[in-house]
Length: 168
Image 1 (cartoon, one colour):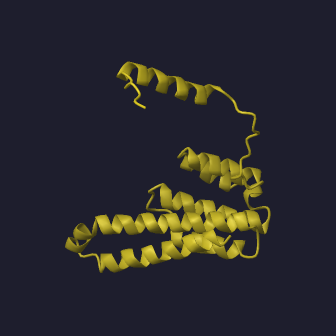
Image 2: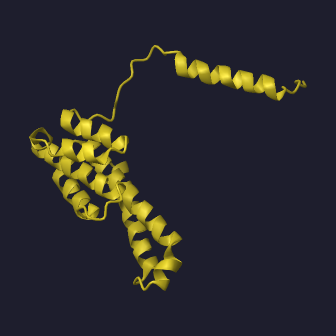
């Protein structure tokens, strides 16, 4: 059975119709935000982080409500680590230390929190390893000590944290 080929105009019109339908038709399912922590200050900070609004996220994380419980304190550390890793600000706290402290503080608690922590830390380590591999020639030329070994160490740490995340 042979079908006629669609012209570009017809194909684009059909594509535009499908995309428009997906954007405008609401399905019957109730949306559930599985990513919320249930701690308003932390969730507000996470929303600011997602928008790339580092200053608003830091301000929200500095609120007393963001550290009201031991779980909230550990999540506060986690998202301070995310900001330190993602914002590109060199004068911030070391992200590695914050991630490790957050993971320690979340031990024995909510498995979704541990998943978030290990997944975020693994992602940061993987990105850093990738950057080190892509920039190893420049790093070697400028005298950085063993950039490939540092990349392998970060890659190994990323793999460990991703495996830990999958266990939660």
